[in-house]
Image 1: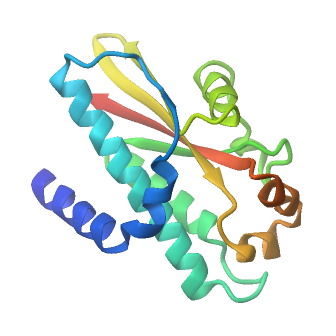
Image 2: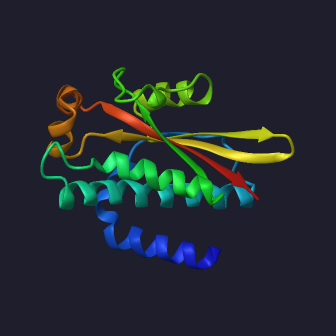
Length: 179
């Protein structure tokens, strides 16, 4: 099952990855651990998932969002994130960086999310920390969300200044178990 999930993700990321790959340019802030094969594998999986999710949001927006009454791709993505969490794969949060979240639940939480947001707003493209909960390790990672389409501004008018200034509007925050 895990191998099938990985191949489907790779197929989608390769097939549609041209849009998503632009997110991986620039500096990153990481734990600096490079001699842990399990951590390296999870780090790679997070980057693949990030390309997959961001590419899907762009494709949904381009293909299905025509009016401000259409379901935003961000709403669809949050439902996908919840399904992955319920199935026990990983957790992903859509986190606001504008200071004006659509929903307060999208505000950054103290700790990892505020540290990650500060790093991403300074230009990092990947921020990570390893967290231990009881005896289990987790990779906490965050990646920036810029405004890449004018359609984003259709429903979120306050994003216009962020696009013009090249600032991020949010981030994806990942929590993935390290085997």
